Image 1 (tube, rainbow, N blue to C red):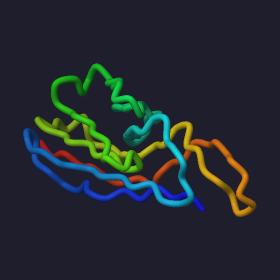
Image 2: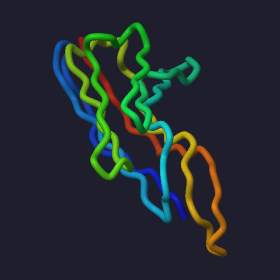
Image 3: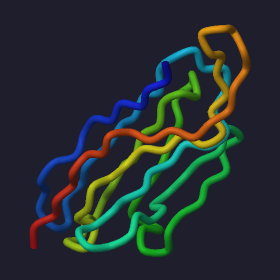
Length: 125
């Protein structure tokens, strides 16, 4: 069974920094893209930042120059370093694994997208 487990998050003052981490576990063969989405209260979930297996990144304009994403050597971990945080960054942040290739209980190769449970980031002014 594939799972994404997030850690980090919490409460920080405006201008501060936080780091989020995500680990994907299970019978994983490869993950194409890992990234972070966020959903503020009353708003739709939006892409924050993502990184492919070859290191290509995609950023929301609102976080360029402030947020950085990195993948671990094992390629099934991803970290989000957030700096110069603003109150408008307050949201629940979700880890996403896109194009995750795994083997099921019968040994069959499967591909699917997975989400973490979400972690709250609150930036006070």
